[in-house]
Image (tube, rainbow, N blue to C red):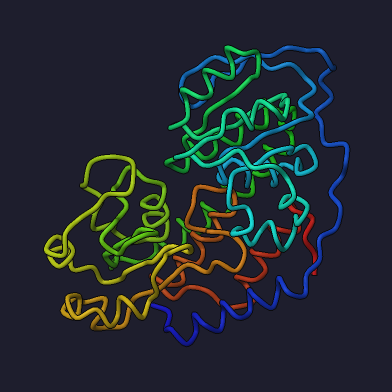
Length: 337
């Protein structure tokens, strides 16, 4: 497993990479050539059939997960509204500062339907939990699709869906190919290890919140050759547990999300957790949040899988990792250094 010293070195290297890099323009003509005024039907991840008329020139995304995919598809200039708290997303402030000036349509918990309608969108992309709002918009003649990428396959399906909906299928296919190749590389390497560490994935708001087996974060751990100690918990959302449950799980490694509201040190110095193997061995790590939350179901999450491979099995050299980072952001975000 990687040491905390090496981990800090790599995080600093990532920060330096983005500090020195610059954003270059992606090709402006990214459409797949389907004629204007063509109407297509798509089935979204809520099972809803939605009709969309090309071209889609005004996009609203009410979910940073879908926003990340829209950016990777080269559609930043078509966004006219995005989710709240955009200034908390390093990817926006570093690469797409113009997005910070866009109107926000709220959050999944507090969606602003009126603000969305006022933007006259050609297409709205919302999280699954806002499917009622999506239905309302569609009934008003504003096409709205919902997404729910809680596994790698569903993430691929989401990218395909948004690619079809925005007439950027070719670019979506290129993105998916990169993701699948990287995923397969991680799985091939992790398959070489016979001793798999047990892993506890902590939640954003609390270390007593965790990912059951039905969440994307559990997929990441399995790709990288780990065993999610909470895999048997039901549901597909963050699940609250007790100290007693966590102590009984006794993971070898604890992983904190990029956007955790607490620190590695908070976990290591918590007296109630002092008997955990992960705490005793100092094996508590946090995803970097220098750019994006690589532990989330977004296209760059395969970089997160590579990072997890390093944490769980110590399998990378620094330059190799940075080359993967560079390859993704150069290819899909026009980021160069």
